[in-house]
Amino acid sequence: SQQGEEDPQALSIQEGENATMNCSYKTSINNLQWYRQNSGRGLVHLILIRSNEREKHSGRLRVTLDTSKKSSSLLITASRAADTASYFCATLNSGNTPLVFGKGTRLSVIA
Amino acid sequence: GAVVSQHPSWVICKSGTSVKIECRSLDFQATTMFWYRQFPKQSLMLMATSNEGSKATYEQGVEKDKFLINHASLTLSTLTVTSAHPEDSSFYICSCSGTETYEQYFGPGTRLTVT
Image (cartoon, rainbow over all chains, first blue to last red; front, side):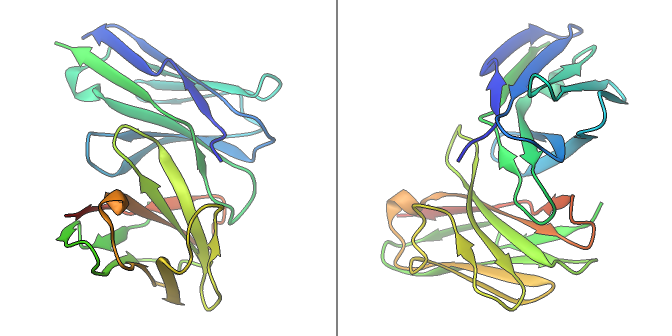
């Protein structure tokens, strides 16, 4: 069953603006991951944050994790048209268990 | 990261026929492989989990006799969609978990269209 819930479901911004997507989940996790998916294509792993971490950066990406609220956020700074895609959070409970995906946020960056 | 391939990348078949999709881990041994299905504009839904040499574990609502999974080696798993129907048209994605059990690596997906 779906665990993560992304918010918003769709987001449209101008190039250069920041995009923030949120994810909530229901059970204890080992780590939380964010993926990007261009239309009709496979998944691209963006970043993994472990349950004992609170914030992580990778280039223009910033991810936060609040285990007390069971939520995470993904911030994309200085967005580009090429960032247009669907973004999914996925949680991992323990080793060799499957990732559970949220419903995703469809981001549109307008040039 | 590790490389996972899927073959074919897309396939069109007629209703009633069977289609086999391969998932290969190219540079590591995949202890566990997962199969997901994604309908248009929806998220990935787990279909089944397979461990090398044992029977796959299917999620609730997924027919094991319709979606046959074989994980014969540590580098290959296959998903066979039997007696395909148009409603089986979807994007099928596999992922592999190796010795670093907290990371999964995804294949590029296979788009199945049943006419």
